[in-house]
Amino acid sequence: MTAEELRKKYIDFFVERGHKQIPSASLIPENDPTALFISAGMHPLVPYLLGEPHPLGKRICSIQKCVRTVDIDSVGDTFHQTFFEMLGNWSLGDYWKEEMIPWSFEFLTKVLEIPLKRISVTCFAGDQDAPRDEQSANLWKKVGIPKERIYFLPKSDNWWGPAGKVGPCGPDTEMFFDTGKQKCGPNCRPGCPCGKYFEIWNDVFMEYNKTPEGKFEPLKQKNVDTGMGVERTIAVLNGFDDVYQTELFIPIIAKIEEISGRKYSEVKNKKPMRVIADHLRAATFIIADGVSPSNVEQGYVLRRLIRRAIRYGRALQLNEVFTPKVVEIVIEVMSDVYPELQSNKAVIFKLLSTEEEKFSRTLNKGLREFEKLLEEIGKERVLPGSKVFFLYETYGFPIELTEELAKEKGISIDKEAVQKAMASHQEKSREGAGKKFAGGLADHSEIVVKYHTATHLLHAALRKILGNQVRQVGSNLTAERLRFDFTYPQKMTEDQINQVENLVNEKISLGLPVKEEIMSLKEAQKKGALAFFGQKYGEMVKVYTIGDFSMEVCGGPHVKNTKEIGKIKIFKEESIGVGKRRIYARVVE
Image (cartoon, rainbow, N blue to C red; front, side, top):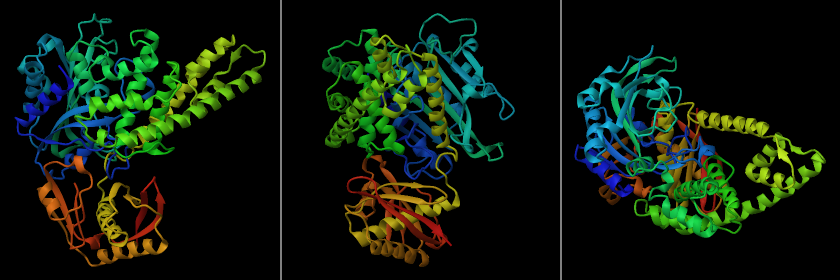
């Protein structure tokens, strides 16, 4: 089965059951300071999972592009990826386990034609916070899964969320494909890392809200949230235990083989080729969604992906600029589903070429530093692990390359010390990623809702003072401030900033009503509503109108009247790239 067939079969299946398809959201979360990237299909739907009405109703499905970088150092094996596509369907307070589990069984066995004997499932075993999920197990038995292939596992295996310290969460039931391999031992079961069982789908039953005190209270609205990875699923359906052998990656791998003159079939080439294919695929999508390489936030992750791909390119003796050649194939393979890749092709090529040339110079610096290290150790025949890791962390110098160069000189490296330093580095990276979720996904506190409405007023004021060339390109809200990104070719003057601030505060003081309407995107645009995030909108949208001053397509939520906001103060304005500016503002007494 091809990826295209899987996507179509999944969406058709749920559309036939009353679901509305929504387009993939941008990889960059809107108004959400808790995450750098969209990492699951449910992420853009958080407001609706918390009870905000969705303009398309209570049954939604999508194919969502996702990026996860917590395990970036694991990429290079047969299945880890940083970019992937997630198929998902949601019940926003509508159907529950009685409908979802039979649908899951029907889709796997009838639509995907997976033999019943190949399917095992897991359910939540229960603990002090929530009972054992006998209901899901009984529903699996009812559709035909034998009792001996239904496993009860603890919260660490069969519970989703909350994404942060508080928020919606609940037990899940996971479906596994039996690869036919022998069990690794008597305790081998779904979830075992030996590779016998391959997770293919996950149904999350969000029925609890975790409070700041650590209690699990019933949610007012029960939700179903599911996720099926496209790449892994087509690997399973086509009998591969390596996602890089699927049609989504084969053309990319073939290009790497062509420009390197090496073969993927050789064991030593597998890891470098997988890393290059995955990382440049992820970089292509991230750039297409408006991110440039930098030393902060999304830009830092993008730079790290590109540089890691280049480093592994050196392992294949790819010493000339090669990234645009590989990315050209990524765009060919993926642009039918994601047209933004084709429309941003020139920008993607330019940024990659520039970054590769810049990093090549950095690698050369690393080589010089390596020579200095050799002088430092003198006649010693072991290179300290701390020094090897210093080259990696400071200059992005591949540990494998350091080892190779040292070997040529008859010098070994302290591998144990290197591994300890690397493990510590990875743990810090994971903790850093975890901290991004400290407050939970998409804060909808009273102050953040005020800031959300203030961004609409700010957008309208900027267009009034600076002209209609101003277009929103992003925003980020916390309880402390709003951040608003927009197009404008030059630094704003102090007078312009004051004019914008005064205009926003004037509209706030007028006590303008904030009206919400649901209509088609075409109708919204005809009425003059601002809608600058093109492909992310569905056929029906929410439009928020603030008096006769602002009209925008937006998911909400917002205040009912501008007087609720108070007063805002712009405290910073800066550049975030060519033709893009950023404003910071806060509510003041």
